[in-house]
Length: 107
Image 1 (tube, rainbow, N blue to C red):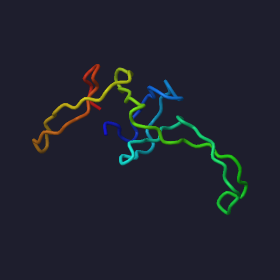
Image 2 (image 1 turned 30 degrees about the horizontal axis):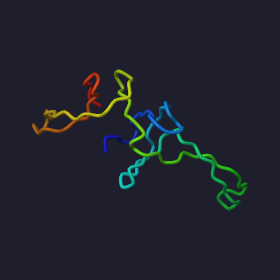
Image 3 (image 1 turned 180 degrees about the vertical axis):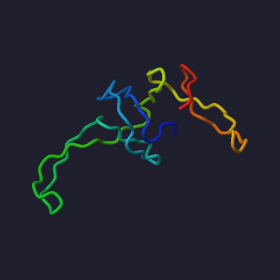
């Protein structure tokens, strides 16, 4: 899974095409994620102690991972995520870092 929480992503297909938002929650077992302000659905709720008024509540619904691309923080373009080996200065071990395929910036 190349997308992580708090990444900025752009929707590349579906009803919310072209919208950008921050990743709020990931569901790796289902391959879905919730993006802030994207794929808004209406849910009808009955009056309860928690919500005495009841009514229609709008909230974000999960969207499939294949419908989004990570937006590079440097160049601002939606990009596929690459991985590059980087040597850690403290331990000397190699780690894989995520990189932009357009500008090779690490994020």
